[in-house]
Image (cartoon, rainbow, N blue to C red):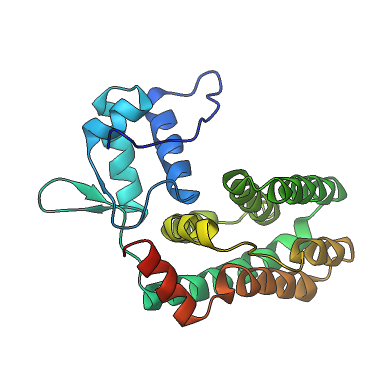
Length: 231
């Protein structure tokens, strides 16, 4: 654990130490900085964060409840191991949840929010071009989150983000070995459909974005990536 590398994260004024520890560790899991099957200790994470154990302990408890971590009998904590079947289940669940979220967002979308989605997509393209995979992943999540939260009554984001958390460690593996995840910018298709307030078109673009990106791996490719990562 002494070699655990956590990406930096801005800490807004007023954010508590407990909330900062949770968000920083959560981000590390989402972008694949922590491997599936990697065993964690409170002391090791606290050292990596230059923090005391108390906020780390609370962050781990919260992340365990979100499905991102598993508490072991020896009081160590582990990112759950990935299998091809579990990966397939998570991707299928993600597609169902996010198509629903996208449809529900359309009646509430504003031109200002669509413009913001354009900005995020451009920034993601730039991150991909410079091979900044961690930033590209975070911007992809920001794009989807910005779309879904247009719906003021949405309650689905915690479910969606739980799936992202569980897929994040595998994405970290994939980005080390796969040259390109996206060949068609389905975000642009979603944006074009949003301009028309076309709920079916938006949902179709989101489904394609998931199925052609992370969901585009054949079972054999998933198993090969897991072998390469020692899973």
